[in-house]
Length: 262
Image (tube, rainbow, N blue to C red; front, side):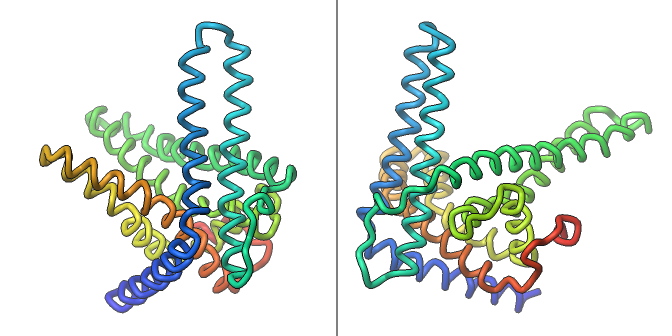
């Protein structure tokens, strides 16, 4: 177990180092795309606030437009990073990395599958816990345990299938196929991915710590640094991690779900 954790740590270090090299070299272009995603999300919230009482139909239409725009920028970011990794010597134009209409549609459908998988896992946990209500155990205890187990199950499921956008952009995979491939390549790599997320989320955890210590100025500085450094680095690191674990994958090109759950 100790050797496995050491290997996982070294693997995470490799991902972070390579991601930092790419981020440092192309920081402004990557940060620009991240900033556009932030602006799109913020503008969507503001627009929803101002037009919520004007017209519900208009509100829904605007929400759909902003969702498409946000996802387009998000997929463009991943595609741009792939181009940087594959062609480091030549300049890559952001406009050339826009996702195709088919990729956007596949991503949206895969997102619905993603939500269904997460909800399905939580529903299974609740259904398994339901018979314990009739065993005489305190209902509140059963409820709290079920919710806790459900949250853990949701987190694990989210982590296992969250690489599906990369398959759509990198291999142009079909929606459900991308979910299955994400499940397959993360089998045996859960600890490495979890360690990577902990490292990348370290800035936010430090921010929360300073907030708890009532050091608002220091927390503000940490939050600014995290927003301008950790966010772009995280996007690159996740893309690099995908390429690494996908490159090491030796399984079936069309995996099934049952053999890759555990």
